[in-house]
Length: 337
Image (cartoon, rainbow, N blue to C red; front, side, top):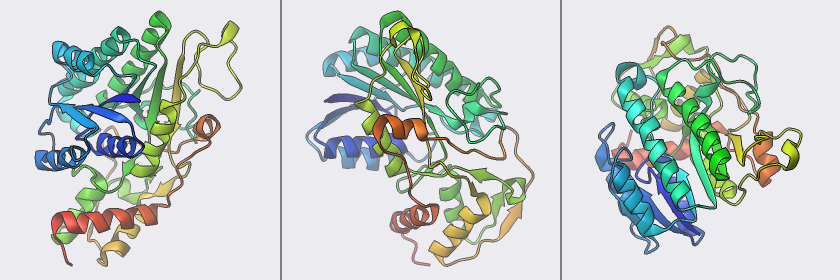
């Protein structure tokens, strides 16, 4: 297939593109190379993708509607996977406007490109953060998600609503996938695992929020992108007579579906840190902190719908995944400790 992927220089977009190229697909990337974190890491990822003759890319901002339209017209995609976004729950407290520009306006421009080219399937990234104050776990796609706690989560929930409207109005198959705490090699330096590793290596204490009494459904990145690749070939279909199969999040009035992608397990933050300490061979000095504004004490995915649709569900144990991250991180940082 010809797959247009936004955010190909990003953590997840890089891994997905690498997988799609390995499977023989043609991939065109869109990435703005923003300086939210180390741009050299983004350029290194893109350089690796460019080693394939089936990869091409446009360095443009998603907010530039004309540039997005031009890139899509030149590539003529059969499917679009929209991963690019202004990420980071905590940064959304400092710079909320960046989330409106990138996540709302940018997503609208991607949806317009999908509509214009009548792609077979538009897939867009959402987040477990949309579950917000919901305490009924594990999180199920059919639960209400109307209590977002940050502007980041609110923008992602908004894109879900936008996607549904386009699916209904234009008969455009749309799948929204909700990610759960993704980690692994080539990760983002602003994410906890990367920050913890850097701090430990430099002999600095790590900040542990809510005094470590937090749980996350940690999802290894290669498991995540495997699930996305399988979902590309599973576009939703508008149900006949509005009858939705039991257990499905399919809309009764549109070819639209929401799918959780998670490990279906909640791991205590202190156990996650323990796996990092074991892999590094160093015990971290811990700075116990109260819960940070916008955070939630736990996330936990019900990924049974993903398994029903694709026959696959992420299952990498957090200890194995953290060890793989550390193996990569040692080489990236040149740390021999």
